[in-house]
Length: 134
Image 1 (cartoon, rainbow, N blue to C red):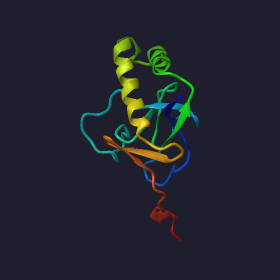
Image 2: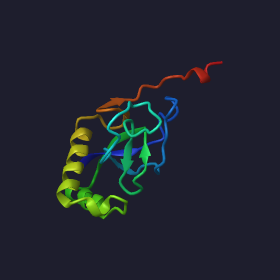
Image 3: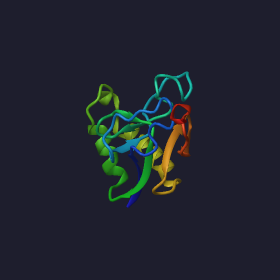
Image 4: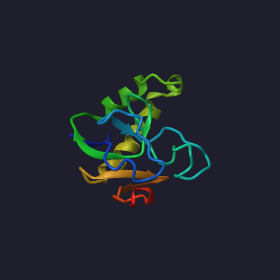
């Protein structure tokens, strides 16, 4: 059993630019690439999201769970995932990518909702947006 990131709807909407284009429970990885400039709250979203292992799409909220899988199995799935960059992903690159994602997940608590802010992964603290105040 290893800790992995999965998508969740929990916490969605507490930031103005939240999005979730993946199915609930989809395994997530840190992005393989992102814009070289910008900030977490830019329109792009690449500096605040994780990518779905199956869909390749992003989400801004996620949690950590224990899953009966292995680093090698996840690496094989990254290599096999159809995408525009798939022909350029070697097994070694995919393995490093999976290892980096699992290393971050291993440091976090199970059952909490998290968000990514550039290079940091933080617990998503419930907040009320001004639009929610009566």
